[in-house]
Image (cartoon, rainbow, N blue to C red):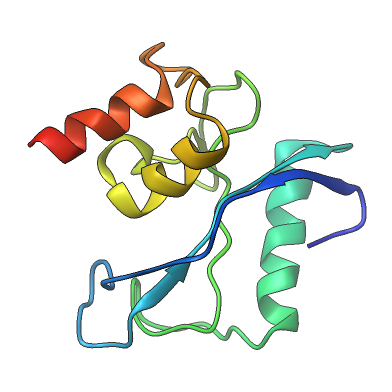
Length: 127
C-alpha cells in the first residue's frame, strides 16, 4: 500500500453485497494488518494516495468506486476527529468488516468496548 507499511497479515478476499447504495456491483473486501512507522494521519494520507493510484475519483458516498481503504484500528488508539475516527465508526456493526478482521485477529480487543473481535462478529451472526 505505502512505503512505511509492513504487512503482517492479510485475510482472504470476500465478495459481499454492496453497503449503503446497493445499486452497484458486489464489493470485494479484505483486511490487512501491518506495522506503520508514522502517525494515523500519515496512514490516512497514504491510504487516500493508494486509492488515487488505482483510479478512485471523488463520487457519491457509498457509491460505486474502484477502491476504498479504511483504517479500522490503530493499536489501542481511540480518536474522534471530523477527519479521522478510530476505531472505524462502523467496525462493530458491519459483518463484511468483522469477518475478515476476525480471520486474522479474532482475539484483538476493540479499544472502545474491550470486547474481542470474534465476539463482536458472533453478536452480528446471532442477530
